[in-house]
Length: 189
Image 1: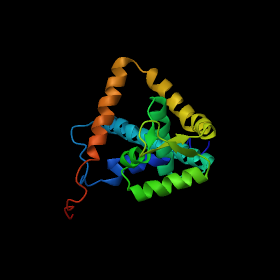
Image 2: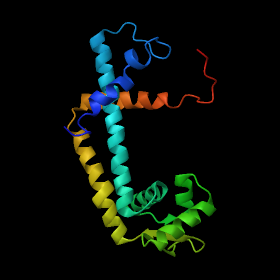
Image 3: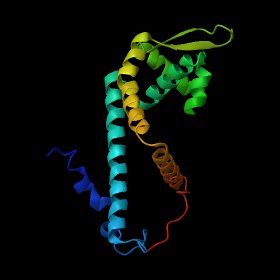
């Protein structure tokens, strides 16, 4: 059996409060039967496997295109905006990524030197430059990130409407747990 297939057995202990938090300092399993706790652990393990798969796919795509994460985000943004019939500027990219204009200039210089974009005069704003993704980079993005997205879409489409709503609610609630203030002091044990 491959290491990927063994992941549930390997990771289960890491997500099981009965193993990692035996004293119940962080997680309470009060009111849950053992089979319910086991099922929650299976959910946590599945999330771990999804995150690991997502990270592997993202890293493989970046390696294939020889780009960093921020570069990939900029290209994806430019491709989507172009597909919407909009012209993309350096300012648009800076705002989307939340980076300075100097960082954006360096990013665009890097992408242009790598043959991923070219800059052209903006058709309606004489003060701006439009950022255009090259056809070769667009094809590479479709072959990597695009195909992966299409596979994931098909999986989500295979769920019933009720199942999708449950997944949406679960993921939204899970996302909200990450918005807590990490700066708050942790109570000592």
